Image (cartoon, rainbow, N blue to C red; front, side):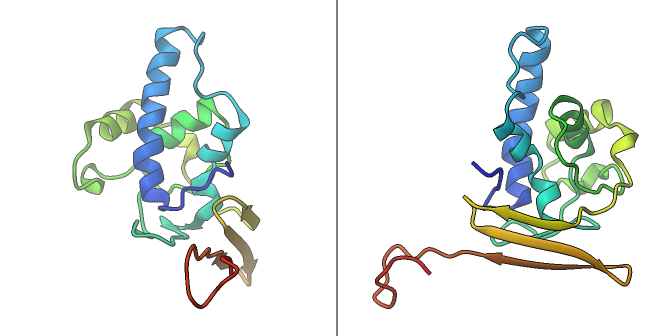
Length: 167
């Protein structure tokens, strides 16, 4: 609901990336008559990497996803064109072997869709609240250095130590 992916930006790129690839095919096939990119919820989901970015391919992470990831420039470019989300900073187009599985969907879209305009953006600053995911992220520049704080809410479903069920 808040656009967050509790599993981290790596899972976001995999799952939402394939959604975007499918949605774009439907959009093109129907000449825009079916637009699976429409709506505020999709814009929030598309903005997730910008919300959790620490720059230089580093991201806030509370799961088993890597905290470092080269986002797919084709995916981010297509989202910029179709959804206009907040964009994360990207320094370059990922190398051919950035994905250990060499996924064809990512590679071809990096080649076809990458728009150089998305490269070289700065890391967003300010405070982000992901109410549903339970994350807060605050990023500020202090003496030309990005400083960040993040916290995650934890819910205990059953514990002999916490009878209220929430901490």
